[in-house]
Length: 463
Image (cartoon, rainbow, N blue to C red):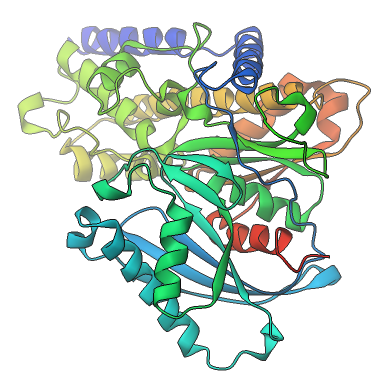
């Protein structure tokens, strides 16, 4: 009986292992498909599954910026206002502080005037609390605005809202310029502050990376969601209208989460998760690699095993059928469990899924499932990065340009086995020579610090 149970479970895992396999040849195909989709997205609007949004950021900070700059980070039910004092060439952020403010629920489905009025009043209070600020030297205050919702950007200081996501439903703001709304609201509050840049968090991560190291050319978010931005030659963007920027460069926000290709190793669990999601057939790459989904994929595999054999006891007494109750921090804790009897795995199974009295063999099996799902995620993320490097000519032997990849997000920061796998896969795909000149750096707070740094790089007073 025990042997039959183990065989049934092993069969499910063997199939999972096969379906999640990411040999180098397959990853090479993913990188090639990513590069192809990037080129298509740069040729024309709507030409690709990935949007390849022109950010209008044509200067990244390099550490020479000086002065006092502000940032507003709006992406969820809270927003942050930040103040950053920069001290030029010694590359020091001398001082930074911030304040977090909760948005009252009724304003999240009210009018644009009310929402932006509330935000502007919080900015006004933040500014008033600092008193007379001599660091400004008589200059107008300048702010970087991180707005983590879909916008159609038309310049570095304007973008119309395409749609709200998350819990927002401020209908009369859709189709309006969010910078103009904020600027008007701040003027009404008597705040003399210019919005110097409208960005998203991924572009901000690249900016924060570039401030610390001028060789940063790619910024990646690997957290709850996933995205990447990079520095492109402006002359290689056919859809870019008007004259080319003086720098000759342009930051592109890829929106790579929506990438999909027949090369991707998609399992029955991914297909079911996608069909039951709020956005079926969208964000396929993100659903394979980001932190929001890894725990859920593992739960689905465990549920399949439970329906095939009695290894977890009576399913109806567990919480295996409850969606999203196994989170990525939980699978990270299980994956890193080094106790002799895997007691952390036992604790997580009992606490989250109400599965008690597991054997050591069963717990080892759970760790293996975490490993299979996470390795696939990290290796696919690495293949995406290689696709971007190829697009800008950085992944070829003979090109010894140093390449820094700035990465933010809890998945990369806190999940050590994910991070190690991503880095070793990059080395495997790039080869020994190229990988010597590539480094990956944890770069935090792109949405806050990064926005203030972009405001500094695009200041009206910039030399």
